[in-house]
Length: 314
Image (tube, rainbow, N blue to C red; front, side, top):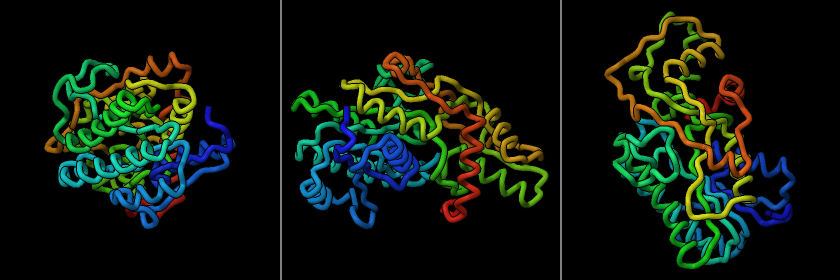
């Protein structure tokens, strides 16, 4: 268990996941949280990261920093996604090890699992077949990070763990019309359609793929739980264990936002993985379960969107 006075570094504290982790830690009474902006510390610069760890000597690290994006961003910039994520992960994990960090939690993504993995996806499915091509570069970077944690544990006896969250949404999300994930993109699209009085909104794909969604503050709570209650080389899935089609998600988002027009589907656009549901039985057996239902979470995310107009322009 982390002491309330423990020195804790949250990498990526301005992002959706990192900011949620800081909120949860503060709410739980942790008093010594270290953060750095990208301007203060570029995690892709090895020398700068090593200097930071050498000076600060954090006891615990939550590695939530990452270059993220939806299907379009991943398809257009695979080299950037692979390079930046791999470099920053290796720099942080390696420096944590060199400076005797007690424990590190590496946060990955469910896209690390094979495209056609048996559903729901168990942790043991990792590296059993090919990845989804639209986000292969990002997935390979994340696999490298979790494997490096595993290898340090095996070779040096560290206590570095990894968690693989399902699709996330919530406060501090990216609502860019082209580079965001599906749910924040839908929130923006329906909000603008409602404000403009549009009779019809076009959504990408067929609407048939199945997806699972987790409110980001629930992930932050699970991250703290794992840091305090789990050690092991195998990653741990974090999700709700519930799924719905993209069409059902679209209808639900339109309902929450109050858009009542027609929804058209552009089937020339890619669907991505046909189904992606995580098996969360391992985490539930450890004693953690999600709290926020999807409709309630979308409402909270929409409230965040409305209260942060600058964020919507990213």
